[in-house]
Length: 544
Image (cartoon, rainbow, N blue to C red; front, side, top):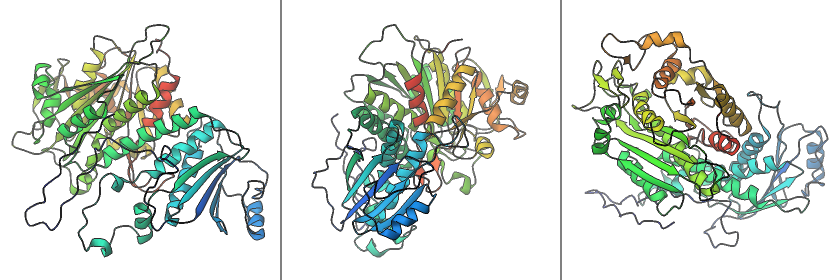
């Protein structure tokens, strides 16, 4: 795909230096696909590291049998240890021996073979970065192919560093400036990635399909993470839409259509227009249409996906406190996840037709901003009284969901992802998405897919009696229940009004990592990308 040049920014008046323009925010590299013989810059890097992913069991670890050259005391320590990860330094360099234990099949409280390998190897790779190694080997010793896939994705996720794609504004004398992270962590973030060597301990060949799958999935998750991490001043609605167009420019399977404000008005998408009315850059609806090159044995209905894309959320007139606004650049995490899934579909040439709808807006404060008590008629003809302008996500999603279900090609099912409510996170925390669905089979398939890849969701009730909380004296609905109870449920019940009888599932998620966990550091997490990709791998047309 041809890359378009980005115009260089002019330095601000009186500035001593200018921030160099970042590369296209939608173009990320792959560590797994890097050329081992490349002449990439490795100044200051030296030595070799080794990560061994071994089969867990009750038997003692034999470092010698794993091909690790260790001192006798290290061999003895490894034989006695029951830890899942052993880390020590040898004369040949640092070594990590990882033996992730598998939990009970399907249990949300324990990991799958894929997820435990991904998190353990990813954590080891992040630890290896502190050594500034020139070479790093990943060795598989008697593990399942699913664990190999997880480990490779873990490497790819661990390799992502935001500053590689968006350099910090550093002046000539900033090298010694204080940092918000430790010097060692900062050095690790700045260090070049070591050359990778990946092999099986028994000399067997790693399946090419596993490798390609890991690259496609890892890059998709990293893309979603990176979009969430971008500053909202850069990733406004226009830049987001244009970036998606550039990402799929020349694609043979994905076409992109952007609806600007004029088109949104003609389509009567008044909820989306109302939310974005107070921002400098107006709202957009982005439609990504994926159609595989190879036709299946029978015609398949498309699946529809809808992502919330609030590029920044002040709360609007019902403005958030500063603490609540701090991370609101991540309020487009649902749309970011959908872009990642679309890129994954294209990369693997999947056989399932899909449509993606990104509802993009900035919820800002201005004289034109929508207000509490305003009444807005949606594209579906449902009138909505605004109770709270900070309940904007469900408004933009409602109009986009109506577009999805009323398409000329009626979808087999529609799935949406949104950073919709704080209530969902209060109930399930940050790592488990709240799942709501009007179709039991669809919900079970999503829960299963999420467990298999450690991208979890848990089904919550669409409790019909709570619909009374959304009643209005002046319109068909209010956009927010005023009593504050059951907020995730009432938000899902609001969305349900706009999907008709189409099988539908809603993922209310966090999209952010507050700290280090496995291969992830603080920042965007790419939540739901892996779950939706696994769901698509296993999907058959939804049956009533």
